[in-house]
Length: 451
Image (cartoon, rainbow, N blue to C red; front, top):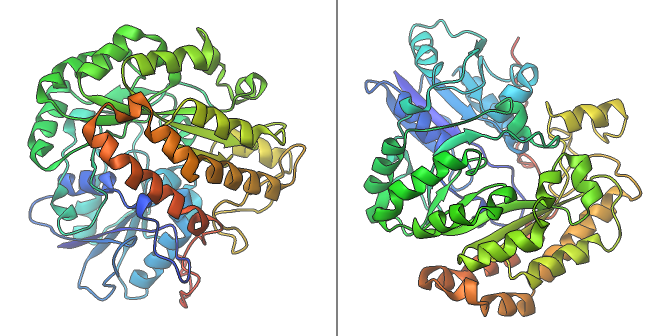
């Protein structure tokens, strides 16, 4: 049997290169490859950086689908299916919108695939592929094995991705994570994580722990930090800001090599945070206390902000950019609110008749950075232009110079050397990202639906 994995791009924008900052290792593909029996031959194409060999002899094509990549995934699936190759799709979008995905694939995997993948392979091998594979239980993360041989020869960003856990217990109503994992948080065995890091250490300068919330279980995260401290590696992760009020925890992270954290600040308006169900962001002294703690332990911040939730003041964008500059964030993101299917936010906007498209991720009128719903007290394009303005301010040369000279941003030689390249990359992509098409507008095929 021959199996082909394809990681879809978001789309194509004529006259531009695909965003370099979007070219990280696709870890879910490596996880599926690790579960695939050794007698199955594997090919892998990453649509973000290479042409797909549609005519390669293969028995099954597997495509992970996210909402932003759904349109392109259906184009790719149609190319294989018209060559009579069956397609199986899974991932976040397949779980949140399984009926839609089922129109473009012979099989859909709903939920986490670890317990289902061996059955999918056996059914495909025997020609008995089922339309739907769904597990009612969450897999034991101790069973995960990653096969990174698929990544050889591909020019990914020089950062190694590692998963230590999945899920988040917070109820933020715009977040697809809480819908996908049903507000649970689990983790892999510490010994398995440590062994994986040890095996990858020689070829990695920085690791990214891709957990949805590294601090979902602070006891476990602390024990993991202690276990990996002897490895002397550098790593970054993403976590909720409440953990930044635990200085003992931050000290353990710093001692273990944590050089940065991605934190969702979302808004500087406490009313907005409450409506998002993120009032925990304001606990124990709020942002000033949390940021002071992070600085004290030399941990850099990648801050993210979301606009379009509730009433949006005209000066909110400039205020957020100034806040990020004043606090010397290493990098930052200023994005509009995105209603993903299957989330409480999407259902509410649907009931309020505020969605501008039936399925924004498939509508030809929708482009990346567009707001797919009617916000309160503003026009959709006001939010888009406000986000662009905040990004331009934060990634201005003046801002980059100010933040580069910051004591915390300079206190690690590797992170300092990478500060200018990383910030320049984000600056250079500002215009390219704006109104980036979903799917390939030059594709001339027909989306093939399952009969």
